[in-house]
Length: 468
Ligand SMILES: Nc1ncnc2c1ncn2[C@@H]1O[C@H](COP(=O)(O)OP(=O)(O)OP(=O)(O)O)[C@@H](O)[C@H]1O
Ligand SMILES: [Mg+2]
Image (cartoon, rainbow, N blue to C red; front, side, top):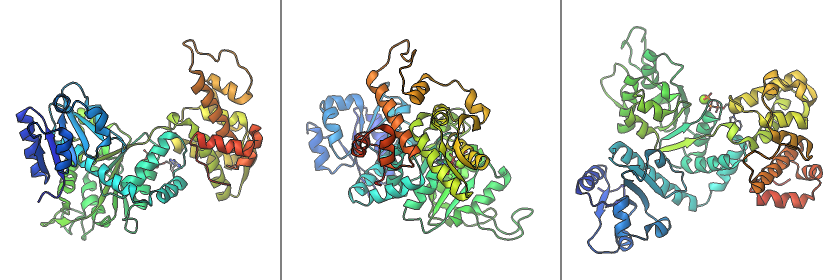
């Protein structure tokens, strides 16, 4: 009966406690409460608790040491409270074991949070059972990037791939949302079945329903034959709902129903059909804002964002630019049988400091165009389109390109010397590696270092690079 796990509820407010307990019992969880006088952590152990849902203030009173011990225990914490937490905070990454949610409670949000907590627990188990690292390697071969946010993303993707949980990928246009969705499918045990993309923004509203769910012959003008929908095509595979933020209200209701019941009705059909699909949704809109403006259903939002993944824009991970350029250059040289050698130091510096509003897609397109137009030799600033040159070039470029003492480098308000030096060093190393095509010996030469010293530095900085 209570197959979903055991939840411990600690809240002195009887109304909240009863509400949460009734709601979660109905969802198939077994519930236990704080026992009078028994030490908090002993009760958790004795009852084999999976998740603790606690009122922050009350938890402080029954377990004053929970902050020190909380992260050491196995159960995950869902903390609720007035004022102390705000709703933006409940977007935690896989490594966190504490989730927070504000009062007054929103049951949809609570349910989503509990589902997410359970997912993280199963991912943790999976993590310990080895095999994760080969997935990671596979992933870093298709999604390029060595910056900390990209590493986090790879880790997240290889963990969520194993589960069936619904994933919501958010990120600006061109950041790699579809690439990430495909990677999740590829790394999952559904990879032998279909990955079915649906672009919710590209299909006219009146056709989207039949596109998703299929239709029976004669159900509307033009329905000449039975047709299966994308849900059915994705059976036992993955359905990728792209641009989900553009889905109209009436379809949002229908989608919600499929997510809840795992069954759908083709247009004009009298019977519903079971499906086993894993949903990955993506959007470049801010869904939370759409929820506030009532353009997106709140309950659907919580259903979709069981595992939220945010891909940061390229300008927030500029250290990935050299390696992306190098990868695309190699690819387009091969595709087009061209022999562009590389980018000159100053052209690379310009591109590394550009803001990339179109993100990786813009970078990829630029490299492709340059390879075609240039054909061979080295790409210099003159080869770059005007808009890349016109931007204000930050001071750091002068340091990068010259390596000489520059004036005006010290900002008005001062600088953190260590991290600035560190960033400068990282930048030079990545540029050297990009220019040498990843060859460490050559890169070391460019930097006037011993190869072993460079490798040491890479290790220390956690910049993984394959052995050569
Ligand atoms: N980390 C990456 N490594 C290599 N290629 C990437 C990376 N990120 C994105 N790309 C490439 O950039 C292009 C855009 O990626 P993708 O289509 O996945 O972006 P998107 O976030 O879905 O964009 P949009 O919101 O515009 O649909 C693709 O050609 C993809 O292969
Ligand atoms: Mg896309």
